[in-house]
Image (tube, rainbow, N blue to C red; front, side):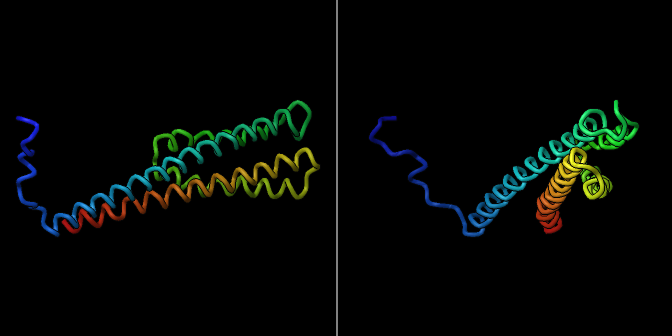
Length: 162
């Protein structure tokens, strides 16, 4: 076609109805909300994984090198083992893992509070770090659960409406 002739689509009337335009805008808004929810879920997922790994490493270092109950380490280092179990579930994005981990973390929080209250300063600092990591892990789990539930809720409503 010569450059002077207009495009064939430019000659066609606008066939977009207001209902179709509204549906397209709703789909675009839903996709934007989904992308935002997905980004928030990814951030909270990696925050939870980082906090969990930090808590495992802190438990190991605390009981083996930093401030063990007995010189050379103690059997209390085994408290890190239950924290290794949910790591696979977090990496696989299993909602059930986020839910029970948000309950399990409170046991470590309680231990941190008790040891921060009663132990000497080297152990007290580790206990305060444990408290901070537990709170961070709990917040990340809650953010992840809420974000995924909000993302699933509109999809469920749209499927029910169809």
